[in-house]
Length: 501
Ligand code: CO
Image 1 (cartoon, rainbow, N blue to C red):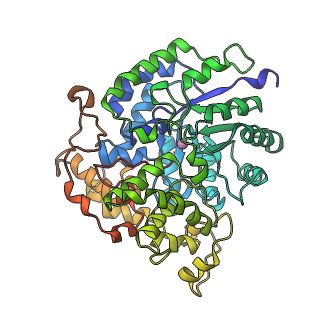
Image 2: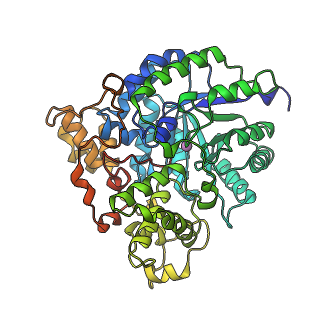
């Protein structure tokens, strides 16, 4: 612990922070005025793209996600830009074929991404391998990710092994991704120390504040030699978001870990985000501290999803039962970490189990596909009873799921030839077909533009839950819960839903 003890900061304000607290609704126009100043701060990187931002841009904001990236790149000439990639799921909710994945990474880099953080919900390395390889091929930084969770199956040895495997696949660094804010300070200390000593790659820590332990976990991780921590500007920090940049920088000032960042500049950054946050309503359920997450293992964003699914069914009173059912379903599925898309799959099956009054009386298509191995290999053993119900005599696949997928690029180019204005459009279309098509039509003037509310001007929060529209969607039937597709994840305009990572 000598001169190498300085801690670096990745600021997530332009991606994860508003995904976690503002339902991913921050617009490019709200970012542009501050990025030149942010560019002077000296962050290790800014996380600006990927996760749910891609979907949200087209679906809610009438923005081309690629154009957002280009403009951010233009204003952030000195800062590395980072994105979150869901491995073979790219920025969507299902597996995509390799030709699409490789092209996506190529275009992400061409448009300005320097660091790609790659994860898989099951820590199945086969689902990350192609992404890491393609990222390296484009000459940028591939960060291999360990999705952190707690279960009888997961322990520090397991995570260290994943670290070794990610290194062997070519990762330049490792990320400990604690999407539900579960890691305790002492576990963080042990895991970081062992990864640093035994794997030997730089280690970055990504925690959410949900249980209230994240800044303590960072402190211990820093003492164990972590290289980078993920934080968010103070007005968009804590709750289900990251610890505050400002506080973490202040905490290490004058110590061997000093980040070297200027608190004065950071205060100006905070001022900006404080001003724009007048246009948003941060719901109570994503702020504050909730140690129940340790018991239920449910990330904050997912609790909002469950609550809104139940509200649609007029069954809010069953929330406690559903929360109790989630860990049982998770156990039946071999303890997957709960992160997109496993969080949606487990959560929705738990809702169905409770609402239908009998466990697995009805089984989601996604659960069936999961049991068939189509999302990858479950971390632990799946329940033999559930295997019997779902698979009968069928054997799960043992290979890499994406090997079953046919190339899609060329076909898709033909399908939307009349709408293509940029080469990237075909990728937007393959990942979110109907959302992208609507977006292209609006761009061409074939559909009216989305009504974008300016919260600060009107006093109406842009993500306000109840604007009186879409009341017809309140009578959804149980069968609509049967597909974990985009419309379920983004239930409707009246309910805020939060994809987890
Ligand atoms: Co996150």
